[in-house]
View 1 (cartoon, rainbow, N blue to C red):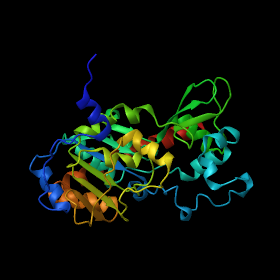
View 2 (view 1 turned 180 degrees about the vertical axis):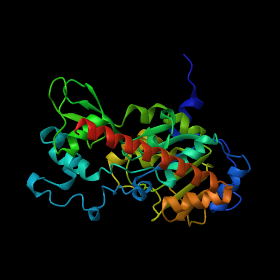
View 3 (view 1 turned 90 degrees about the vertical axis):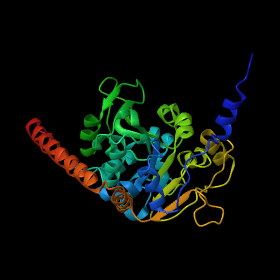
View 4 (view 1 turned 60 degrees about the horizontal axis):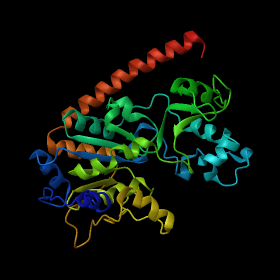
Length: 337
């Protein structure tokens, strides 16, 4: 029996293949790499910050108001809403939060459209999102390019018989302030989102290793880089791969210490610990751009000469979705929903 030691090393420690060097440690340096055709396997990582411009509140923010007036549910802690154990015991608080979060006419933001534009130009290897709002789907990003690391509301399954239920069924029940019940066995239907105590979707790990080994530019937007194992992706890309971080606040990817954090980071990054080095004297590849995701992608698009393409795609997407929303309203009115 022979062992592929190089493969084992790559799996545990990552790929050390030399990558194109940044001419400058700023957003201009990143766009120059793209203009020169030196990168064509871009991975994008996003969090709640890319969707706030669509009117979708960040559910982790106490100031969002979605946690107000939940006293009637007698929650042991606010986080219990997102625990699978508590959901099995009482799913009502979860669905009430879902109802408050839902924005029926939310459209993809400029940041979502920029990611779609990267795909259209043949530069996107994969898009990884922490969000469950399906705005990437609405932007027209193909299913095979999308990894919803924390699951999705797009589909749901009965917790008993596992029957698949679609978004429209769950939505109608949630908006009517009812707990969705299986059409077959009448047990609770849980949206396919990842709650605390559940495993990440299989799709998250399916192409993760090859994606991160092949990535030649990592663009991170609208995330605090504190939620494991998602944030561990930054450690796993090659040691020379440029990493552009667009967010209101900077974080180097540090998380809470402890065994559980180590295990979750190891699941994605092995033994690699490559924290962001923006502002440090030994930084050779990390760029931080302070601001919101939409402004960041407009800046990139201006530098690349893509701004007209981006705005056109946003306008076309909005127009298409407006027609779909109108058609759905008419259908719901006719059917009495």
